[in-house]
Image 1 (spheres, rainbow, N blue to C red):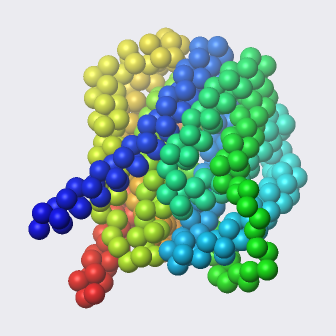
Image 2: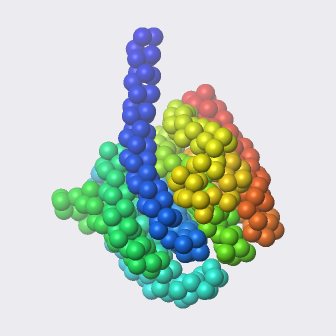
Image 3: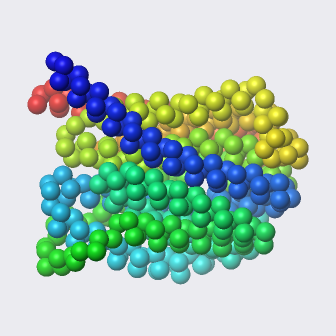
Length: 423
């Protein structure tokens, strides 16, 4: 009995340590990015800052579906890892890197006409600005593959180091680039992601030769990738749908809403960082037949700390927060801050649940997200760019989303517990 209790305590400490190293490194990088955002807000005029926020949204819409590669790669890599087939694992990883780089180069060319269309819809922005940001998102997708290889081997310290490199590189090059306008921001972001990819590749590339004579089975990630790509793409839309509709319907008032959006969405970034820990844990548990309740508990506890702090601050001193961070000219939407923070708390929970479900191999929740995004887009656009109404409708949509995901997660967890009981 004593041994069992000791082993349980040790397992909890290990999980907490792994989650914290990822959370702290990602949190540090996120704080650097927030500092850059706040500096840029004071540097740029409100209309220009609104355009900057749109570019941030474009990047995340491109980059977060790119994180679908993480899901697909982790799911496939763990197939080999749990079987102890190191040679086949390294052979598969080498082939994967080659294909991803070729796909990224092709995507860079194919997104030129898309950039023209998006730039026009966002308020007649320069297409080159949009394209540079899309390129940065494509490079981020390649980085996601390298990070997924680290995740699947549970190399959380190396993963954390790469987060720090990305945070520092973004701080330096985005600050330098934004002085030249929105195009400079895109160029700075692209440069930072290229440096991050160089570092990630160094961490994951083995110096030992790969045996190319080995025959690979179960190599494809197409179905996993398709499901994850669509799912995380929908999550990205849910994260920025309010910003896009405000920018489209109320471009002159976009700066003030962007300010509260930047503050509220830090919670989603935190949930995304913690997902880097939860995803491989869920995938490995699925492959080995274990459970993931402890990992979900650790993630929930860590995420509740910043969520609680931001909820209290946005409820008690929203004006002071916005004025101190962004300045008086961006404080006009303060009456919508608390509502939007609540919406992002709910979206953070959805992010964690989606990560668990994808890692566990679930697919049907994607259909639920598709329906919710369609309903949500129509509902939020109906606010016609009004700040408070947009935030309120966003909260209602996020609540609808999380209910379905929660039901799906409970169903999967109960099914897993029943399997363990039978075993």
